[in-house]
Length: 328
Ligand SMILES: Nc1ncnc2c1ncn2[C@@H]1O[C@H](COP(=O)(O)OP(=O)(O)OP(=O)(O)O)[C@@H](O)[C@H]1O
Ligand SMILES: [Mg+2]
Image (cartoon, rainbow, N blue to C red):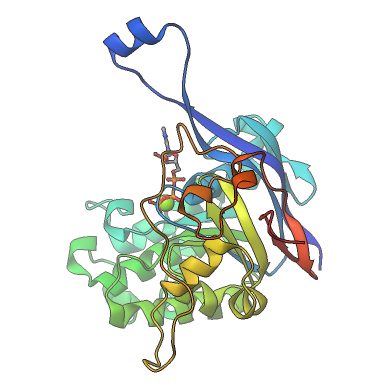
């Protein structure tokens, strides 16, 4: 399969705003949050790539960079072979309708004063020349498809008149109404009720097949990622520490951080013993990350050399890479 997205050496630094006194005493030295610190991967057409890791690891920043909602500090973002990193906002317009995003909180991404049908149809108004009637027909069909039924009734409702599950369906419908190719789903089910999560996830899977979509699926929950992703990239403090086929990553995790994350996933069988402990301590700051392998202060296998130099991603089996010096 062809690559739809290919990022190379992508970096995003955010300058840290210092207080007046800090500025006075720390001199001119600026500090940065290394939110995304030189990462590379590709997403094939029709593939679901998961991006998992603890809070603050740079998942959302990566998603926003891929959509050019943020400008990268360095690096290449190829979309169908074209480098988005160098495109102006005017040139980005043709790409925008092919890319969409679904955020975790449907309530904050829907305007409370816009009727549901108008909200879903809004991208059509911006990106297409369809008439009002044509837009309405398209919206109604899609509403029925995503389970917002009867559409003729729900079309005129306001967001506060919907259930959480219905709101998330509205956000999905709005993302798909322009028939995009690529969707960044940033924790799309994290806010939903447990009973709703599985349904929305299943719907996203079906819609992916029907609309030939490619997803970047951002989540901190590995059991969700296991269900929907073909491959998973594990991020830690701005870097990818392991990436591989979902099955392979679950069955043969290599990086100590991946093993620790997997240990935190609830196991259905209580007799099954855990072999790994949940990582010690909290995720350090991305402003001044630990030297060498960022994970070494929390790693139970750490050796002195782990604090020296960034460990490269090594291929440990076909298409499966891990960034740990203990790999031989
Ligand atoms: N606009 C910004 N300005 C400054 N710092 C930012 C900005 N956006 C993100 N950051 C910082 O970049 C780092 C990565 O943030 P990001 O939101 O990408 O993490 P995440 O993996 O999505 O976390 P979560 O699971 O909590 O959503 C964090 O340290 C965050 O504070
Ligand atoms: Mg996030």
